Length: 71
Image 1 (cartoon, one colour):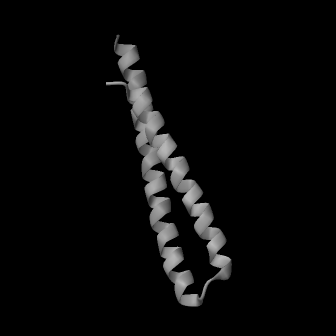
Image 2 (cartoon, one colour):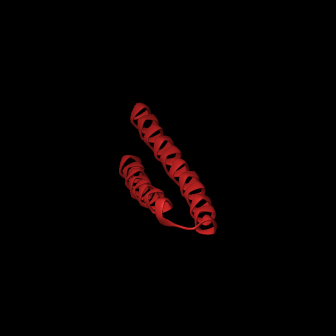
């Protein structure tokens, strides 16, 4: 298993999510109060997913290092 490649895939997904978050933040300027509440909830959920992706990427990268050290 290629942990470094796997880690990079999670990092790439996190970057995509970050771009979506930025787009949704821009949308906040031109929406109603109810829509703002909904968008903020989406942003919070996406941030959680972003952090999970980054944490997973970090763990996979560290795992790759452990595999190299063991070899």
